[in-house]
Length: 442
Image (cartoon, rainbow, N blue to C red; front, side):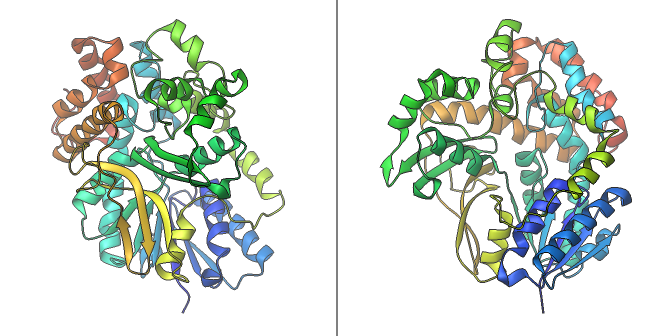
């Protein structure tokens, strides 16, 4: 019998289409059953059409089924992919706009800091409900999460459901590696690396070309203005910290105190450069708002484009293939809890590091200690995330406030009383989603 792979949040059109394309590119999954589930019937139908196009173009004997029932979708699944978004632009915008009133300038706001924390608070109850259903209907399934904030959600799910097989995936590791290879004119096939830290703040501890350290070549490349200006924030961090970080300059400008605390620094480092995500204020929110009324038109245009069958760079299909396909071992960077893996990050925190997928399961690799300058930076974020997750699980607003007061960017801009006032306004804006809290005042 063919395998069953379930998409929760299948209305995420681009993710669903690309992941299905990758899965069907493996011989082991040509007869797979693809179960698409979403709470939005219209978006679900668009995704079904995209999947059907791929099946027809590849002449695959696969089948696609759609449902708005999570139970139906999950029953007897071998693999589960989670790509949900809890709350639309009307609430997401408060994650950006309330901090902006306090001069905490946010570019994306989906990972950490006040914006990422409140996104986690909205999303966590749904993620835990999904895990409860997985435990009931497909307890042996491999669960791959793509929903942000990656580290906090994975940490909560993995701690509440240690019996499930859950890891989180992000394309920033392999995407940045390809970018760096291009900068030094190296074929990606000749590049090897070891990358570890936390999601969006992982660093290439080794970056090699044909087995030799490629960092000297990268340092020379970054001296060129045309390369430096592509990623001003990340290149400044590289020059200061000696190691290259995975996620884009726009994202990383939010995670520290160096680039977004003054208008002149925002103008210098965050307004220019980067091909796909300039660090300007509310970049992703503005994209959401621009597209929210035209999304049907945009999706129909994408459905009219030629179907691509070539496998992309996402990890998911390779992981499934290693575990229950042709069993070719596969190494990827996954989000797992830190039990003896990175020596100088908090025990139990969610870390992102090399994981090996084989027919015997997922095995996380021991990294050891990070360089001290990286450990200092990452510890701040990891410990804030730990406190935020524990605060969410306890329904304790004071712990949420305390997790935000140590956020590097927030603490660089605001006083303690200002942070409390901002946090309480964010609680009020999210009250519809936070009924599990004891109160909504820190």
